[in-house]
Length: 110
Length: 115
Image (cartoon, rainbow over all chains, first blue to last red; front, side, top):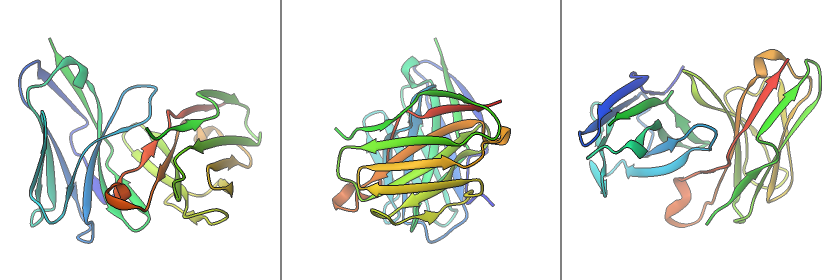
C-alpha cells in the first residue's frame, strides 16, 4: 500500500500564475520530505525539502508547506514558468530510503 | 557535482534473456538504490545497498537480483527478463554524511523494453 500519495496526476497552469501540488502520507514516522522534478528521459533532480520539525521552507520561487497533523504537504511554485513543465514527485524519508508518490505532471501554458 | 551514470539509456531485450544494468557513482556514497518508474505508480524501490557486498530487498524485488562488489558500482540483474519488466530503471546514491544525508542523487535512467 502506498504510503505517499499524490492524488492529482496532472495540473495545467498559465504562465505567471501559481502552481500548487499536493501530497498526503500515512506513516507518522516519516521525518523528512522532499520534492523532486523530472523531465522526460532524465533522472529526477532534487528540488526542495523540509524537515518534520518545520512547517515551511522557501527557496526562490518554490515553497513547501508541511501540515503534520493532517499528514499533508504542498509545493507552491510562484510564478510558474514554461521550464517548470515536468513531473513532480513527492518523497518521504524512512529507514530504507525514500518512499515516492506517483507524481504530478505539470504543464505551464504560455 | 555528484555524478551517477547508467550503462545504457535504451535497451531492448527478448523474453528469457539475462539482463545486466550497471550504475556507477563518483562521490564515494555509501548507499545505492535501484528503482523502477511506471506511469501512475511513481518510483518503486527494487533493491538497495548499504555498503559493499551488502544488499536489502525493497518493495518489489521479485525477478531481480543485485550485486555490489565495489563501492562505486551497483548492478541490477534480471535473471530471465519478462515483458512485465518493461520499464524505466533508475539508479540513485546517497551519502550518510552531513545535511545531504536524506537526498538521493539519480542517474539518467535506462528505458528497458522486453519483447
